[in-house]
Length: 206
Image (cartoon, rainbow, N blue to C red; front, side, top):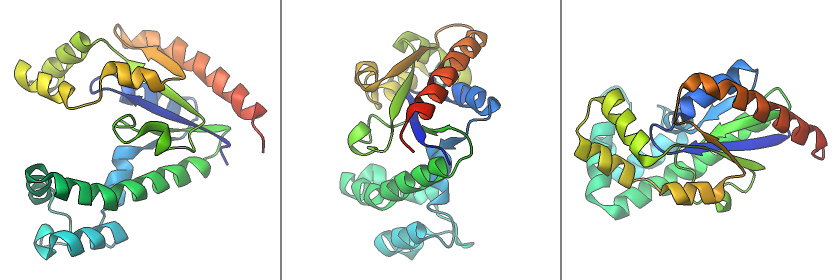
């Protein structure tokens, strides 16, 4: 069981997935908050039952799956409804992430949490021993979004603005990986961090 837990975060198009893949290739379990978010609203889950109880049975598709389009319309039309959804899903996501990390093989595990800063940082995730931020300048985020998603510059601006600021994320960081160039340069940094985290895990109390 992993005794040392790392939180990985970063802004949109910063390179969290690439970093996760490289840690995973070194044998490190990476628990993904996006995967956890889908799991806690899967058919038959307590989370989906609570969502249906709050929003009504019309929020479900005929096959019992969550109607994500209908839910999206509801929560973007009402801050209160969005908060109600978050109150149902966020605690369950945090619990699942922690359980996945703690049960992982290896000396440490990583919880990849894109909205760690927005979700309350260390206050909501006190079980994280360390926070790793993958960082890029806003101009690089913007260019990557245009290239990756084929969207307008205005939409890219709105997507970046909807997240926490770069400064707010960096304020949480114990470690920072700057990913503003060729992704191949990331490997040396990941291997360096892997050695550091293994040493920290070995020094942690059992």
